[in-house]
Amino acid sequence: MRLTSFSDYTLHMLAFAAAAGDRLFTIEETARAFGVSRAHLNKVANTLTRAGYLTAVRGRLDGLTLGRRPQDIRIGDVIRLTEPDFALVECFATGNRCTITQCCKLSGMLHDALSSFQNTLDRYTLADIAWAPRDFLDDASRI
Image (tube, rainbow, N blue to C red):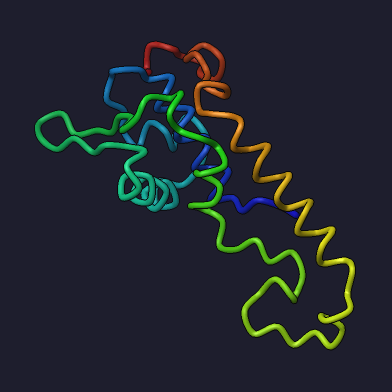
């Protein structure tokens, strides 16, 4: 199993937002900090804003800020928001055509593993992974 780059960048953007504290930050500076395209982070920011994890501030000083406290943002919820599906095997997906679904014992084990994965992520919040600006920027004054 592998998380999509969209999920990875989502967690990066949230950590960046937490490091910014009360200061507004921009998609452009986030893109520069992580060496990621602005267009890709635009999609991430839109998803996070629609879900209430980020708040967009319009006006003379446009920017983004966290929409919730870091300790209220569960990593499991963010991953469930950003991952397209958790169909580890065919029988987990809609339209299953596997001929051994009725007698397969593997699917039960994989369901348990997936539940453990999600339950583990639910125990952690953004506060657990948040960085200080000095942890990842050359010039901490940018954040």
